[in-house]
Image 1 (tube, protein in one colour):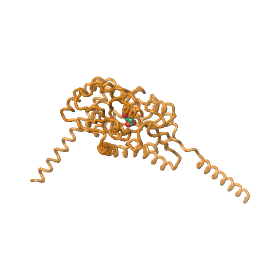
Image 2 (tube, protein in one colour):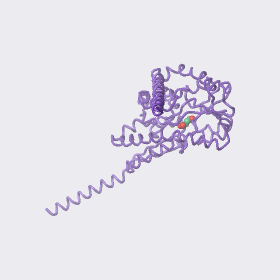
Image 3 (cartoon, helix red, strand yellow):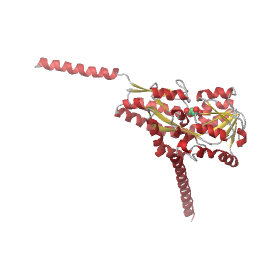
Image 4 (cartoon, protein in one colour):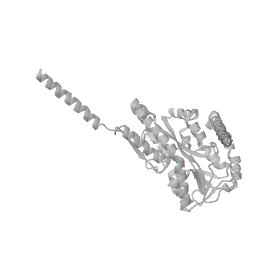
Length: 354
Ligand code: SIN
C-alpha cells in the first residue's frame, strides 16, 4: 500500500512538473502591431499603452511588438500584411481604407464634416462606427476601436488664405478619393504618397505642401521644410484599430476579452492625450520659427467652406447617404445640447444676481 502511495506521489509530482514546464516553456502569443507614425504621437503612445496593459495582464503569455515609423511596412503594404497574417494589428487612418474596398471610411475625410470632437466621438462610437466595422468582416479584418488624432492644418511653401492661393499647388494627400476631390475643389493638384515619403518629397520640392494634424507635422519635422502653415481645421484625421480575423478567431474567449479590455483602456488614454499632443506640437513648431503660422479668418473660412462643402454631395453615394445624414443629425443634436447648456448657465447666473 505504502509502495502504491509513493508511486502515486511520484506520478502526481511528475505530472505537475510537466504542466509547469509546459506553462513556462509555452511560446507567448505574439501580436505584431505595425504603424507609420512616430512613437511620440497619440497613436504611438497608445500602442505602447496597449502593449503594457496586455503584457502585464497576460503575465507574459501575450507579447505585443510595436513597430512604429513604417519600420515594417508603409501605408498600403501594412494592410496587405495584416490580411496575409504577417502582422496582427494596425491602426491606419480612415483615409487608407479605400484601396481595401471600404470607401465608406472616407466619410471621415469629408472637409468641414465634424464641427467638434463630441460629434466625432458620437459618430465613431455609434451606429456609423459599427456599420463601418461590419464592412471589414468580409475582408478578413475585425475592427477593435477608433482612435483620435485631430483636425488637419494646411502647410506649404506659399501662404494659403484665399482659395485662389491653392491654384496649381502640388499637395500630398493620403490614398482617399475624398481628399483628392477636396484638393481639386481648392484648385490644387493632389498627389497620393505614403506617409514615410512626405518629408523628403517636401524637402525636394516634389510636392509643394500637405495637410495633417500638428503632432504628425511636428514629429515628422515637416515644418522644417514648409515656410507657411494655415491653422484651418478644415478636415479630420483619426484611426481605426484593426486585427486579422483569423488570428482573432483563433484566440480563446478569455484572451479576446483581455485584449478587448486593454484596447478599451488604451482608447480612453489615446483620446485623452490627442488634443494635448497637438497643442504641444503647435507650441514647438512656433518655437522652431521655421514656419509662418496664420489662422483662417471668418471670411476666409466661409470662402473655403463654399468651395469644399459640395464635396459632401459629390461623395454621398460613396460614403453612404445614411452615414452622412447620421453625422448631420449628431452635429445638430450636439449644437442643441450646447445651446441648452449655455442657456442654463446664463439663467443660473441671473438667478444668483437676483
Ligand atoms: C497617420 O497618422 O497614420 C498617417 C497620416 C498620413 O498618412 O498623413
